[in-house]
Length: 338
Image (cartoon, rainbow, N blue to C red):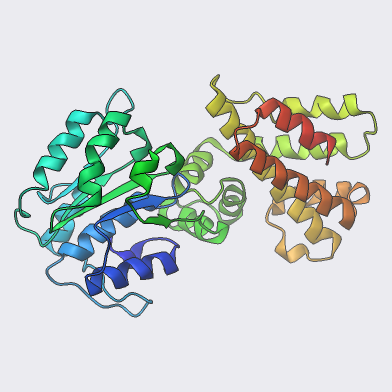
């Protein structure tokens, strides 16, 4: 998976490509960003670029890229190259100190056959504290010929001593257009469905794939019912009844309930965006085309000012969820402010 084949992140990938080509890539890095946006794939692309014997110089803002076709690139891609290791959390969901010590031991030796040894810790926030402490000296003074990349969606869970030793490369959520295109090309999802899924899955390919498989209709219908319920409701109690459509949909844990509410809030934001488009006569830019008749019925209750206020409320609610606010409190607050 060379840089040029990855979806989105063109500026970030260009910087990594330039550093790899110039020999200025820091030996210890943190790749941080939401789940499912391509951080792990980018780390593997770095390993390929550093070790490919026949690199190319494409024109898409990339200074250096792996060919992606030679035996070295193929083995790295399949996880079979002796100098490129991807460490994943074990059955317990954590990465233990014994695993880290073995990888640190390997860095004391020269690469077996490649130019650079690359060790990728995927979901690095699952490194136990002792394992992180065991990495500190290697992160601060990596042996020549070794590169360590910590991939995480929750960099704040890493020890401050680890974060201080590694430059952080940030990966933003993918653009909905990129996610929709990926769904259409990689999974043969019809365009209207791909656009609807991309609008509610927060720029994550993993979330988009799962939502496409399970169906986005139920999530969007719940969001539509919320808007219909609050459209003309003046009584706060009537509004609060709408929360049953968007909260408590997880699988029991606080994390799953939070993720479920986040998906429903993004669906609300998508419908509100479409209401704004319809209200200004821009029907051609509507994402949820199949719901356009239902949304048109809501237009008398959602003028431009209210739609904008509601969109801002959903955005604030998503921010509160990111700061670990209670999903039930967030849901109650947002329906009172739509």
